[in-house]
Image (cartoon, rainbow, N blue to C red; front, side, top):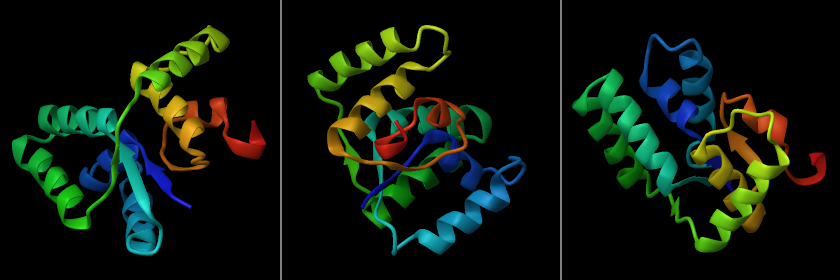
Length: 132
């Protein structure tokens, strides 16, 4: 089964001063090649922007290169995901989920992905699979 990698995990692996860096780097090293990691087009864009603005263009390019070299599948949002994301937004009016969060939840549900590499507490709030 695939594991989705969220923006916070990508960032924590790249940023040495991030409070989750060591845990993220260890997890990534232990699972790379054994766990089929996937991510989304919007997570890639969000991660690129975050790395570029906080760590510079070189870090953003290294991230992109990593995706290319590891051939990490980049899942693409579909129109049905936008509709499902809207329903998630309506179901959780008290949460501060981002647009990327909403669409990621919808895409994960559609594809049956229940495992996530993330440090974003919103994934705990939303819950997936049999925990839902």
